[in-house]
Amino acid sequence: NVYFLNSSFCKGIARNRSLTNLQITEIDSFEGGVFADLLPFFEHNGNLRSLEISGCGDSDVGCREENIRSLISALSKTKSSLRRIDISCNRFSDEQAAKLIGSLDGHLNLTSIHIESNEIRGEACGALRKLLTNPGCKLKKLYLGSNGINDQCVPILTNAFNKNNTVKTISLGGELLPRRGRRKEDNPITIAGWHVFSSFLNNPNNLLEKLNLSCTNIDDESAKVLVNALVNTKMKSLDISSCESIGAAGYQAIF
Image (cartoon, rainbow, N blue to C red; front, side, top):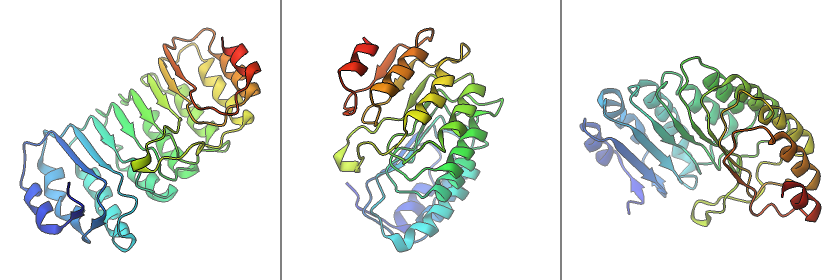
């Protein structure tokens, strides 16, 4: 394992044009400017299909802003061959996440985005809406667990989901991955938010097949609202594990 990412290492990668998968995970410390050193790699490697920069939320705070700016620049320059991106568990703020998502505008071949365990709020949700409603969007899987998404964010996302005809997997659940620091119930959506979200589930045009709501604060009333909305959907998989607020009445409504 590499726990410190320095400039010389990144300059070596920058000369590569064949990598299809790049993973930079759980790095404890960054040398300032390392992502700037990677710019030639992102700009000229047309083979890159999967990029993961995750679990770096405990990196040197003093270097992170510089690296985030460089990462945004790199993603803006990356060729559109990218299919999957994972920027989860980095503690990106709402503003930072919004800029990173905005840098994906040109990546219309993306089919999977992991952005769990950051600090997404309204600004980042607005950037996701723009991405999801692009007529050229091919996104099929979106992972948003443990972000602090609240009732104010839900209408923004629901509006985007209702206008999108490609997404088949949505995760709002907070699966527990201790090494990455995911926490339970970090998307504090109340019954008001679930009512709004149910309008998407009720939409006969949605293609959703898999929905993860594990470790959320769904209670009995919210469970009833969601289940009623699932009657005529194409859903194949629903994960409500570790939803500790669901009682007997909620499970009775589900089953």
